[in-house]
Every structure is written in C-alpha cells, then in structure tokens.
Image (tube, rainbow, N blue to C red; front, side, top):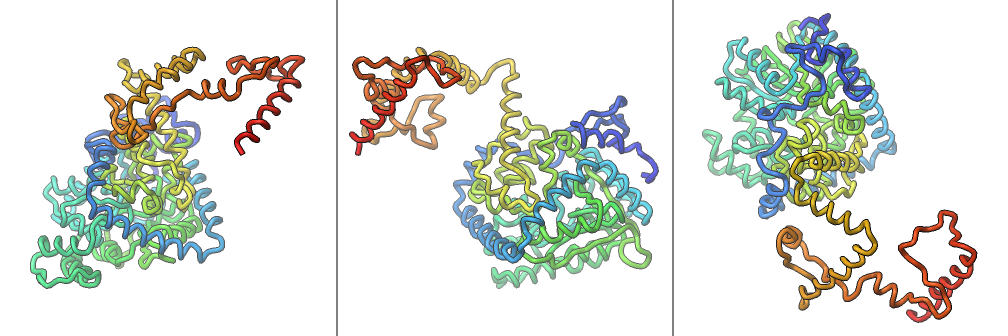
Length: 562
C-alpha cells in the first residue's frame, strides 16, 4: 500500500487515534479500510490459536496428573528464575529501567496511530512494502499470496509469537507450502507434532530424553547412538537445517520491535538461526503486532536491556538483528511488513486493559507463576499462556470466548513484581473477572451461582433472617464428626468438597457466643448490635458511661483468659 494512502483498516490516523485516547470510538464512517471495517473489533472466532477447546479448569486438571510434565516445568522455570535474579541484581538502576520501559509503552500507545503512519512511511521509503491485516484470516491470506508470488514451495521461519497466534504454519500447509521452523525449540515442537507451551522457550515442557526420542523418530539418518546431551542435540538440529537454510528463497519472521523514526525492524535471538533467515533468502516477510512499534532508537535501547535479562537471564542477546527496507547487494531483495491488529485495537480501547499491550514477551511472569509452574502452557489453550496470557487472550478475543482464563491465577502478585514494564496483571485479572460476571448477569436464564448469590443477599439483608440461617447451619454438625471437617457434601456443594474440605459448623453462632460471654451486667443497658451507629460517635447522654462499662468488661475478660 502506498505510504500516502490513509485508507487502512484502522482508518489511520483518525479511528485508531480515538481508540488510543478516548475509549475507542470510531468516526462517523465506521472506519476506512476495505469493507468499512471498524477499529476495536475483537479477533474473530475460528482462526488462529487464541483460545482452546476446553475451559482452563478441565485442561489444568489433566495437566496436574502428568508428573513428568510437572518435573520438567519445575526444573526449567527454576533455572531461568535463578539466572534472571543474578543478572538483575547486577544493575543498580533496574527499577528505573522498568519505570522507563513502562513510560515509553504508555506514551507510544497514546499516539499509536502517528507512530504506525511514520513506520509505514519509513519502511516504504527504504524499498519495503507494508500490508495491513485486520485479523488472522487476512494476515494468513496476505502471507500466502506473497509466498505464492515468488514461485517457491517452501519457507523458513524465525520464532514468532504473532505467526503462532494467527496459525500461519497451518494456513501455509493448507495452501500446499512447506514450512521449516528453524528455532531449536520450535523445531522440537514441530517435529513432535506438538504445541508451544512457553513464550520464550516453546519446548520447555520437554526434557532432553524426550527430545532425543523425537529426533530419532522424525529426522532421517540420525545416529541411533545419539546422546541426550544439549550439544549433541543442537548439532543434530544444525545438520538437519543447514541445507534448508542454503536452498530457501523465502523467510517469514516476527519482530521484537520496530523503530518508527527509521523504519527499522528488530529481532533478538540466541541461536543464530534468525540471522540466517534474515540475510540468506531473497524474500523476507515479517508479521508484527501493531503494539510492537517504538518511536525512536533511544526507546529501543531500554528494551534491549530489559528483555534479555527478564527472558533468558542474559546481559544481552547473543544475536540482535536489525534491518530497514531493502539494501542493494546485501540481504533480501523483497521486504514485506504485515501489521497485525487481530483484536489489539479492541484491547487498546480499554483504558485499563490496554496495559496488556505493553508486554515485551519476555515470559518472566510465566516463570514465577505458581499456577503455570504446575500446569504448564497447554492448559491455557492460547499461544499466550501464563499470567500475561490470562489478561491478553481474553481481551483479544472478547472475554466470553476465554472466560475461564482470568480465574487461572491466585492473585499473589508475583507476576507484577517481575514484569519488566510493570504491568499490573492482578488488577487487570480482577477487572476481567468483573466483566465476565456482569456479562453473565445479563443472561436471560440466571446461572446457579447467580441464584445462590441472590439468595445469600436476601438472607444477609435482614438481621433476623441472618441469625436464623446461622442457627440452621448447626444442623451440619451431623457431618464430619470423626475428622472434625466435612469432606463430602451433596450437589451443588460437592463441587467445593471435590477438591477441598469444609470446616464443621461450630456448636454455637458468633452472635450466640457474644450474647453468652458479653451479656450486660445488672443495671447496664443492653447494646443493640443491629441498631445503626450514631455518625457522631455519641449514642446519647449515657454514651460515656456505656464506653466505660465496655472497657471494664474487656478488662475483666482479658484477666480471666490470662
């Protein structure tokens, strides 16, 4: 698309500008792109991998039964956490870096429309082509047609969350094209007919023995004496990929960032496979979420310090590759950038939830999360697992398509403490839970939970009903006599006791205990606990005497209990 055109799906700059600054209201025409598309549309159902086919609790229950998975997760996440802690401790200004990263992300999203226009202009001026994709289907169609136009039948890929999100590999395969993952972990996942389970380390759920078995089974000509040692496994993958690199004419990548002021794209990685994909092929196609843009190189500098320490516990990435358009005689001769929305403008319209778009995909929140450490990434259903996935995926798709993910957290807050751009994940989780509850409350047929809550509100709104309910609860003492706790209740309360015990009801209610132990002495006025408090703190002319009497009773009680 020509740089001077503003008829993008975003309606740049007007529609996206509003989405970023005043809640996502579109213009009168509803948007500028093909078909009059409107900014702020969630990712359509049925394409890509942003939601699973099972609610999180069901998938998590199955994962908890896999003891090998839990051992693999504990070892891998523990190792990464320890490395991260060491390199972060080396910096005296780590918190200042985090604050700067947060500030740059917030300022960038506030003017995202302008930065995207500038990025498009600079990429185009340097010989590249920019394409705009509203959703996964459009992005897959664009990339497929670009590959077909080259006449080639195979593609090499750099690790990319955006292409996993839209299901690009599956779309290219359906078009008769062969895709070769070149990142070691992604190669393991592809050869194992598996799915990624971690943002940074997609094969984190596999141990070395399992990887060896995959290589022996899937790679032709592997020595059956292959050892399950990192060096031997890496050498096997390198030999397998070498000829693929040399013959490939088309590569597909993601991008960790794009610098608007120069039209520069940036990929960071640890193995060198990315550098091969970005320099050897004749055609390079990059798929990038629109939130990845940064205004200047000075801003990129911040993230090049935050990302490696948070992601892999390294001081800097072994390979940092940057490119801007086409350079004659050096690198690809055809450079394409596909800018992907797929629900991002819908997320941007939420003044609180948009902070999820600050994410730099380091995976630190996954490594610290007690839930992720026990169930792994597949239980989340989305390509974005862990705490960040629990707030990002529901916003990209619409909360009801991922209604269980905001509850996949203990709200311990550890994720917010390690996030390099200070995303307040627990607060967004609570907000998404509230949205889900509000949506459920609008249903014509109330749920069992809603009915129970309504009944509870009715009981608690009247002191007499509340006291009667407390006394009736003592009937439950017939249960749990031997163990002192109730381990089995009838439906629907059985859902509680299926995974936890319920305490056995006490012999008397709190109110009964209070009346028995705090009964007024002769000649003293009885305090009515249900009477409204006097906002002045004075309950009449006898208030000072009442306070003195209460203090005396407390003193007697303390003396008796010593």
